[in-house]
Length: 119
Image 1 (cartoon, rainbow, N blue to C red):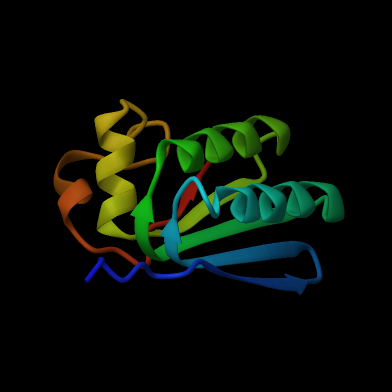
Image 2 (image 1 turned 90 degrees about the vertical axis):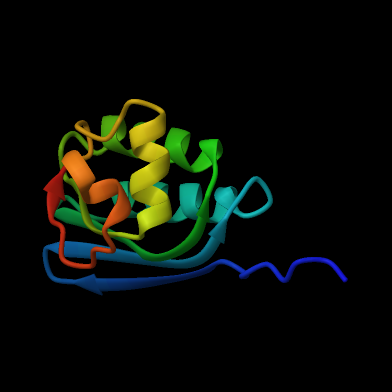
């Protein structure tokens, strides 16, 4: 039997002045387009803050890293990482982007749901 994958689920919450994206499950090559589209929609639909919660991510591929970097650039500093699962922290550390996304020291191994980092 093959390994069960956690299907990606993305919830978007729009409030006056902010746009919050919560992603849960595997963010892999098959699903990263969903994350990329949600981020692009957030950039296009609000002039306010864009909050990204990845505390429920169970897999985080290199395409997801590229999606974060692209959104970071196009949002002109409005994107904030408000939660990151250990797998997200670890991947960002491995590709040398931990400090860019506010992950320092042992954070890559510590579950976090309250980290707030301006991107």
